[in-house]
Structure formats: C-alpha cells, structure tokens
Length: 74
Ligand SMILES: [Zn+2]
Image: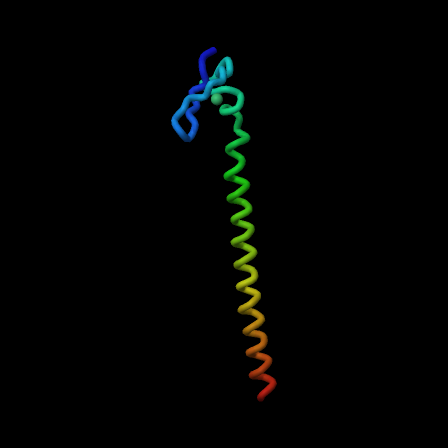
C-alpha cells in the first residue's frame, strides 16, 4: 500500500493511503464525485428545454392571437 496519487487543485498530493489494488485512496477512487458534473449537466439540459418550451409557447400564442385578429376582422 502506497500513498494516493491524487493531486488537489493546488497540486498538493493526497495524504491518505491508497486502496490495496489501486493508485488512489477510497475518497479519490470513488466514482461519486464524478456524478456531480453529470447532475449539473442534466439540470442545465432541463432548464434549456424549459426555456425552449416557453419560447415556443410564446410564439404559438402570438400566432394564435394574430390569426384570431385576422379572422375576426374578416
Ligand atoms: Zn486521495
């Protein structure tokens, strides 16, 4: 068992012991931190879809009101 090979954002090595068959400790070998950007990407995707749906609805309402006004005049 050696030291964990993970470096933090300041370039300092991790002080924990590595897992028996890995180069990283239990904290840095864990796939859980990689799930955070995925969740953020999913949330961003949902927000973009919601914004696109609102824009589409706005255009549809404007088209409906335009047609209603044109047909009402005729
Ligand atoms: Zn580590």
